[in-house]
Image 1 (cartoon, rainbow, N blue to C red):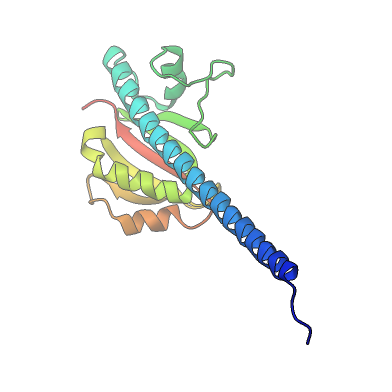
Image 2: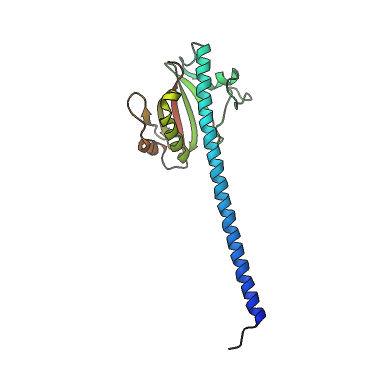
Length: 193
C-alpha cells in the first residue's frame, strides 16, 4: 500500500468541502423557495378575505341606495357594483364586467332573492378550508347566512354551514372543501336586515 500524498489528501478534502457546500447551498435555496411560496399563499389568502369583505360591504352600501338590489333572483350583483364603482379590482373590459380572485379565478356575485347575494369562486382546497374557518368565526359580523363547497366543477354542492340551523363545523367544511387541488366555495350573505 502506497502512502497518500499530501496533495491527494488536500484534493479529497476540497472535493468533500465543495460537495457539502453545494448541498448546503441547495438546501438553503429549496428552503427559501418554500418560505417564499408560503408568504405568497398567505398574501393571497389575506387579499381574498379582504375581497370578500369589500364585496359584502359594497353590496350592503348599494342595497341602501337601491331598494330592488338583491331582491331579484340571478341578478348579476357584481356587474352592478363594478358599474357603480363601489369596488376596486373589477374589469369593465368585458360585458358583463368581471373580477378575479387572488388565484386568478373568476368571482361571481349574484342575488338569489330575499336580500341575499351569493358569492362563488374557485380556490385551492386548503384555502377553502381556511376561508371557511375564518368566515365561520366572523359569520355574525359579515352577515353570513350559509356556506357551500364542492370539490370539482361538476361535483355535488355540500352545505357545511347554515346560520339558522348550526354552528360552524370545521370537520364539515373540511369534507366539503375536500382534498382535490381546488374547490369552489359558495357564500351567501344578507345585504339588508
